[in-house]
Structures are given as C-alpha cells and as structure tokens.
Image (cartoon, rainbow, N blue to C red; front, top):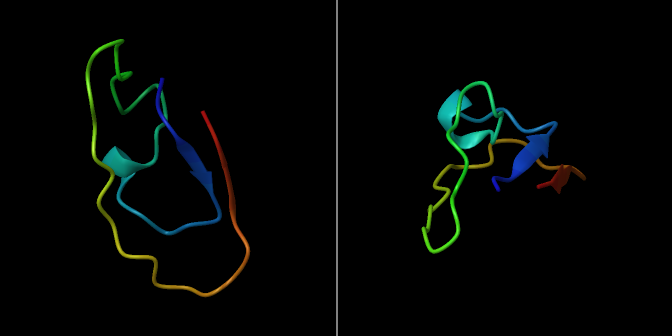
Length: 46
C-alpha cells in the first residue's frame, strides 16, 4: 500500500504512484516527508 495525493506539487517519490514508488509491504514502514507549498483542499487515497 502507498498513499497517492491529488493536487499537491510534491516530489514524484512521495506521490505514491505505483509506477514510481514501491508499495509498502506488510510489516514495513515508509515516512512521507514533503512541504505543502499551496493552501487549498486536496485529497488522497491508498
């Protein structure tokens, strides 16, 4: 599982796109670290 964000301008490796970011396997962890530059309402899904 990964988290995919919509509307945020963030690095590709933080976007949760399965073609770019490897899935987080059971028992593993991944820390998303990025700065949100724009105010607004955004959504995400896993």
